[in-house]
Image (cartoon, rainbow, N blue to C red; front, side):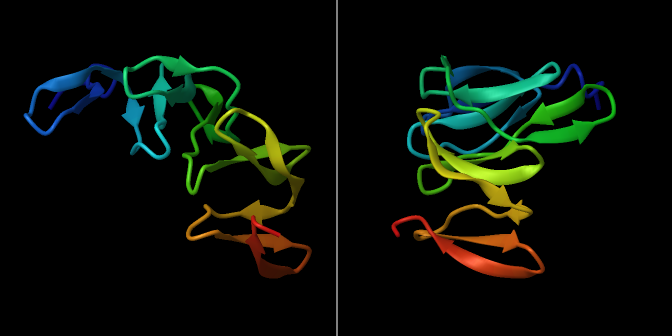
Length: 128
């Protein structure tokens, strides 16, 4: 087993050949043409050619080695973000779709996401 910093993730095609060369410390699934990846002490989204997508901001997650590190994925075309310690949602172009207002938030699935507002949890429908 190698050092964790030496192990890198990439993406293969159905033929088993690398479509995107291993270059990431972490890699998520593709959704709506983008995948969340981790490089050094940062994260972002790449397209299917391995190019980084500008404008998509993900919420910070604390990692001892790096400090705060964004790493949420797109689900149903939306990604969570944090602003003033509250969660909201942006689309894959980085536009705010639902303003930051929740104390906690889950991923969207089939048009709904579980969120916590105040002392209760609710299901937020992105189509309302």
